[in-house]
Amino acid sequence: MKDIKKLSKLLIKNNIPYNIDILEQYQIDEDDIHTGVFCPKCQTLSMVWKRGSWLCNSCNITSKDAHLTALKDYSLLIGSTITNHQIRRFLHISSDTTAKKLLKSMKFPYSGVNKAREYYFPKP
Ligand SMILES: [Zn+2]
Image (cartoon, rainbow, N blue to C red; front, top):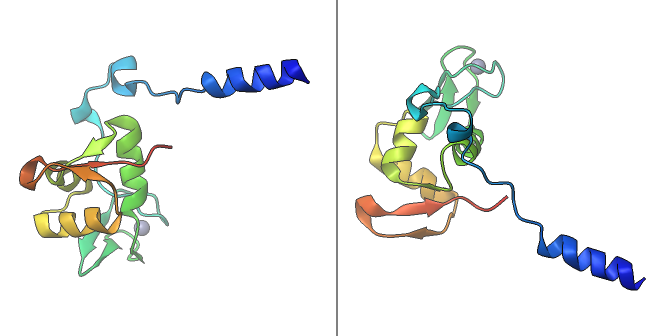
């Protein structure tokens, strides 16, 4: 029993999330990553933000939260924080107000003000 307790403490202590720079590891340029929002139905990068939701230009379905999958990919591939400029670039959103609304709706912690504001993805 004592050994099991010792072992469990050791496992908890050494449990560090596997957090590598995957682009560096596989020597992939960030510019080579296909950006945009995948359609949850037809799996194409055809979603466009229109009047408060995502619309697929390929199969015409709409989604309120298709961006969440894209942002999960972003956090795993690119980094643990994102700015308004970066989210617009990654999700193909032209309006900074829309990007701000999306970022606010996810209730991520943030630091900094205006253009320097960085939002932190929740830890897995
Ligand atoms: Zn579709």
